[in-house]
Image 1 (cartoon, one colour):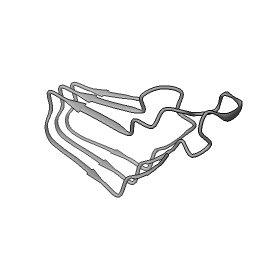
Image 2: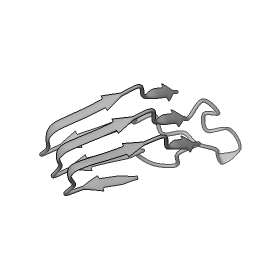
Image 3: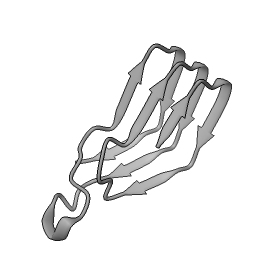
Length: 73
């Protein structure tokens, strides 16, 4: 999931289950709020299910707020 070059934006209520790669990439944002996001990689890599435990990767951004996130590894 990519949030790139966003300004004064809100992302809310997303659930991602068994992510195969890095989950949320945030880059070049200014004024981004993410609320109530769930990332669930608790199945691990059994049966080729989700196995990547990177929750949020933030780079080159300002004023990023992550509130109410749940990350299960």
